[in-house]
Length: 333
Image 1 (cartoon, helix red, strand yellow):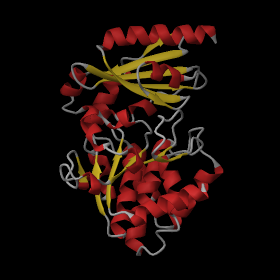
Image 2: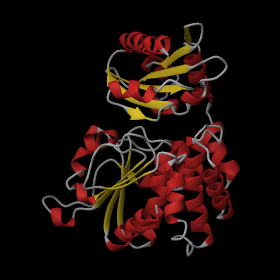
Image 3: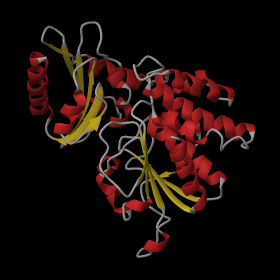
């Protein structure tokens, strides 16, 4: 890791133009990493843009960077490849994961930097990649990469940086309850706390600050729970009609996967949400079955016990197909 850290710092310091992006349907870990990297690069006087398929949810506004995330590129000049920015892709290791509308930013793989913690990365030999499958989150990885580089930040800037990474870590570990937590995770958050991270603020924003409309939507969503194989498989969903009734957009469902976990007899949990009239997004959670392989069948990915994908398919046929696939694998196991 030391050589990778040195290589990353050299690239960040020796180049001037950067784009930082994360996967579509951006979440706490991807955004926390993105924001912290942006803050560090701006402290070096670099030209930096944060470019995502979608805008961050309002819940992340407290970190202070939401308004800087764009959906269209400003830095690059047409047909000026010599000054193309480096693309830093965080919390995903496949180009397709950032969304169809942003694929044009990938012009030169030698100017691609990947920082991630998911398995089975896409083969991109020319890229500079830091992928640690044992890390709880990308925010944890970035802490170890940049902790010595931010020592000259003033107190307020250091607190801002720490809150970004702390929020991402507690989001991806479900406030330290997931199996991906390690001693290195706790060391990272203890140092971030020393840097000024505000645990209660970050926790409330990540997990507790739900509007009445979101609570109503959550209630409707949980009422759809179906039990298969005597409750070993559980599946539930959110429809566009439900979102409309609650006057919410699909982004409001972030965190709904954490409401039904693989425990108390549940071995696999599937959550489906309609993102529009043609597509559904699926989250798969397990306490044993390798759901990454199932997500891979639909072009998705993630971790062995937590994966997801987006597919152009109606809700009911998708549910039927997933139940068939998962039950067949569970019976064989």
